[in-house]
Amino acid sequence: MNISKILATIDAEIVKLQEVRKLLVGGEAKPGPGRPKKAVVAPVKKVKRRLSAEGRARIAAAQKARWAKAKKSAK
Image 1: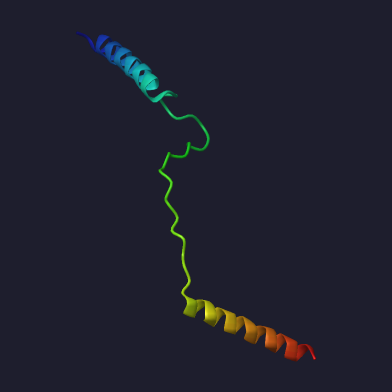
Image 2: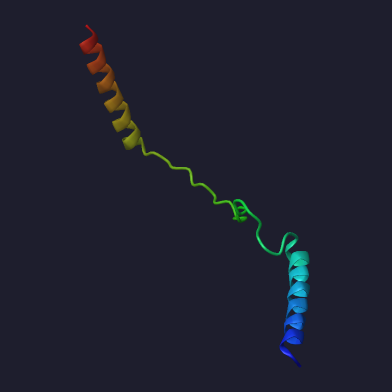
């Protein structure tokens, strides 16, 4: 077997494999120009953050202090 015949056989196999890959993937065998498509990732369940009553009271007190300071400086 000469080299050109071997290369022709390899090229034919590459074409066949690319066609099979195209059928399996459902798209092009090699990526085209542009941005790649996003990978499909399972959505992450967001955990709702909860505030304790103590934390809520601290935030409310701080906000009331800010309002009082603004009201005092406005006079």
